[in-house]
Image (tube, rainbow, N blue to C red):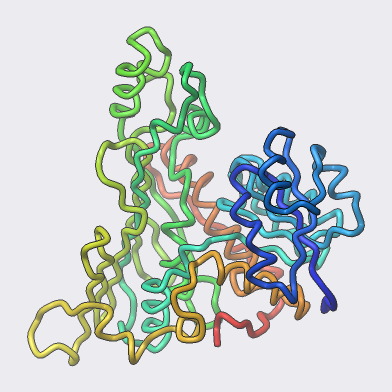
Length: 396
């Protein structure tokens, strides 16, 4: 069902969600920022300073009971996402949710079923898929520039040890995540672009088959807590953490490609949020390792020598239509634009619940594999009841 008139959006999670306040400025003729919800009333001060007319809620349930709210942005801690999303969908709200969409396999299925049953729009806010370089490579892949895919790499390497605890050494939610789970616990920034390049869940594309996962010891995490809080802090002991420093996974697709994936929140080093590589029968791609380096491409028949070229050398030919239309806009803009368009046009978004579920399922499936010594674990097909995809702005 199409939506006429302004889309009234509420942000849930007022601290991290503050950046979503710009949605009404970006889409002034389509979106009204109506409300913010948070347990901590002190967070409302800066919201009121910037948006004097915004309504405030400390109860998620009361927010969902409000018939004037059309959609919610979930910017809450990750382990709350799936439960809140299903609750909102069943309350008749459209949902855009930060990553990951779910942290259990059961939760992935429940989310898919909630969207299928309610018909409401659900989109995971995976902004990495809309970075310029990732869009450009995606367009090259869709045009067949790389040939048949055989190998891909992705990684999210970000030392967040200082964000795992409060000043007194008690754990924040990120620390609780490392304490309680052992696997690829933050998969979608890495896997999302790769999945799009390989055509996962797309008609005529590929699909995931199985995953094997291995995890190192938590040496750097223990060293951090020992240095900050002393040897008597529980976090200084390896047995306190289920999650090791570096989690590695191999994913095989049903089309015969293999994907190497790394998730590392603890190793001391400069960050690399966007480690990607792609290998096909006609070309290859390597993402830049830091801001002063160009991403690299080699295409058979395009290079006189067997040497890499800058990705930007191919921008004129392969720039994605989204970027040509709205250059220099951040990934978050394209995510919200697609979410708003999907609501207005009465369709599911280009990055839909089936993508969200399978990308997020890597978290629990990798935990299962790591617990079994790296044994392969099958990746479910969440699309078994999916209706045929509608065209979308992002696939133009």
